[in-house]
Length: 415
Ligand code: GLV
Ligand code: MN
Ligand code: MN
Image (cartoon, rainbow, N blue to C red; front, side):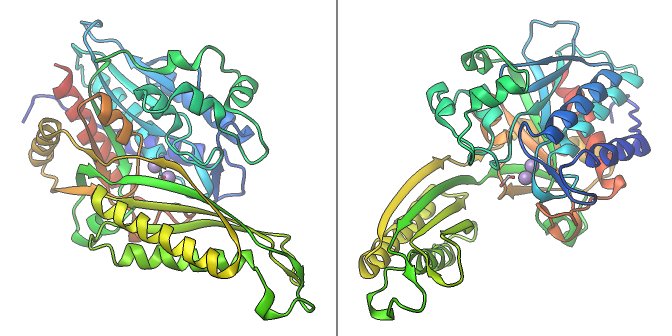
């Protein structure tokens, strides 16, 4: 065991998590903080203050990624990074992402209290827009940092009201070129993100810490269907071109393809399905769907996608509906760094905490940090595996254990 005696302020961390949860577009216990909404901006102010209270130096980049740094004795060396996000999808809970930001601040504060002096700088990032709510594309900040999205593509994004990223970031007070968001090569020596598992495995097995070896590759698609509308009483069934029904066939094809892919990690979801005109007595002339398709393997994901596309073409041909099937993003899976995982694993063993190597089926900013730095994630259990809903819950003990493992791991990476 290292001589470091780290004591995480469990009550303080819990209090800060609850305070930030009250900054929301919806009444408690619902947390909703959509990118650059008024709640997101207030949340950002809270996060900045929490970083400063932890003794960290804060800067923000042109897209609002926030960096909170503890300078090491050799500040020119690549830094050890951590962090996550504080934006929250509509109707979310209070732990997703936030544990990895406020927990990392507490990890660094605890390290400082212990008397530790880092050689490499330690840095916590609050990433802009991990959630795809506003622009339909997740991990915007980390994609730009890693250079895996072009500035042109980022500038072409539109929110549902047609507003651009440039307009919205300017209104939020962020200026400067998006090119400048990209990290210089070798900026991070290593990166470790703390997060709730968002699945049931740790809780079921009674294991307090998960170490992420793989992050599944997400992809998403928008499907626009144009049929023919009309009076729900007057248009007879044999001559209908109902856009909703074509969409319904596509949604069922997503489920079928994911179930039959041959990989247990293939998951497919239609989380957006809108119809026009949306009146009970009118045949839908237009339907719009968004499909989320993920897998830890690219071959089985590609096979599922091909089946979904084929089913969509057949359904639309048979129903006389036009089909526009467009990719929003398709990211490869990421592998965790074995050396970093081994260090975290040793920390857990020394702290007497059982750990389990696992796959993250949710995506995270670490999916993109893994492209530019050795990366892993520390997972903690959450009740029933619930996430993206207000009932999301993690115990203060598990959160504190996660922050403690993070602190020791970062300390070992920083020497
Ligand atoms: C991230 O929130 C995801 O959808 O996996
Ligand atoms: Mn999320
Ligand atoms: Mn998250």
